[in-house]
Image (cartoon, rainbow, N blue to C red):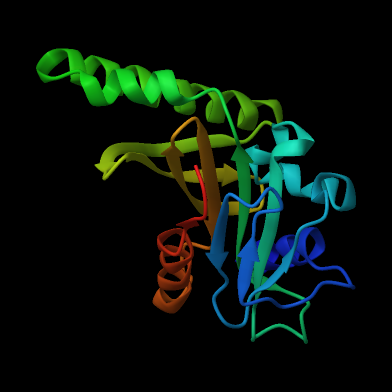
Length: 210
């Protein structure tokens, strides 16, 4: 576990970042509430820290879709020299309304099949992106939930890496024609308060416009 924390420290920590209470999407479509004690950057962090691609498949998307990278400094480390969890947020503004409509307007067996196809698209993409970095996902589970006019996809899995395992979770919210994806990773022994804060982040999603 010590090796894992040190690796995460090398990947996630750099100067010039700032704390924030509210994360506002630059296109004005949504906001998220940053838990207290977390750090965040909205730079093109794929270029700032290319090593992050080791753990976040969202870094394989178009740079225009990247929104935020956040991490929680580990208080047991020296200053901010370690983190215990991190998240990556992307936003794709268009192209998903048809898929969502097919799921919502179907029923019975047809709905089950439409939901399975919707999930398979995400699962296949995630597996492919991690395979590029020779990382394996294990114990993957997926749930598709209807929440008002939105569809919410929750994916949970475990990353098997050379330096040890990490838990991985993604909450993807399909809203109108766009989708927000919040990918999160954390150590298997992370305190409950850390996982609670990650849950709070995804639950704080507030749509400002369609």
